[in-house]
Amino acid sequence: MQVAEVLSDLTSLRVCGHEEAVALVNVHKTILKPETTQQSVSGDTNRVDSPESQSNSELQRAKDLVQLHNEMKSKQLHGGHDAVGEELQRARFDVNRVLRELEI
Image (cartoon, rainbow, N blue to C red; front, side, top):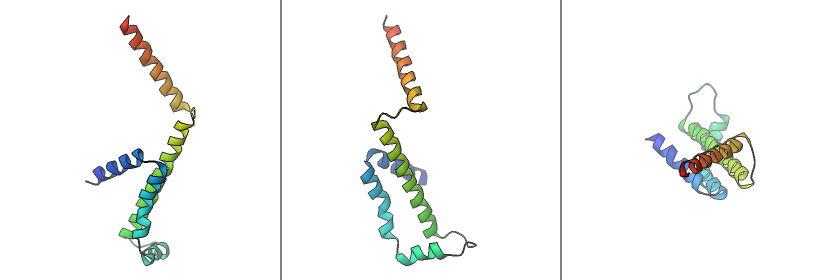
């Protein structure tokens, strides 16, 4: 069940723009109470992670995901040529070449 929720969230983040994705991730900040945040910051490191600290780590992971998504979108939009982009272009060229050969 949790895997389906994560996949749904990833799809939502992929479809929306950067500002919407950040707003989606930052929604959880307003839900957390200030004393909950203080407990997780000043809490004992020997205790088992509370649901609040797990939520904070999940929130941080989601923020990292949004940042990574934004960086990748930015690279794609600005025509950043990296190894993956070059491999993808080469693969597209090969596919088009094979399709042309099949037509003849």
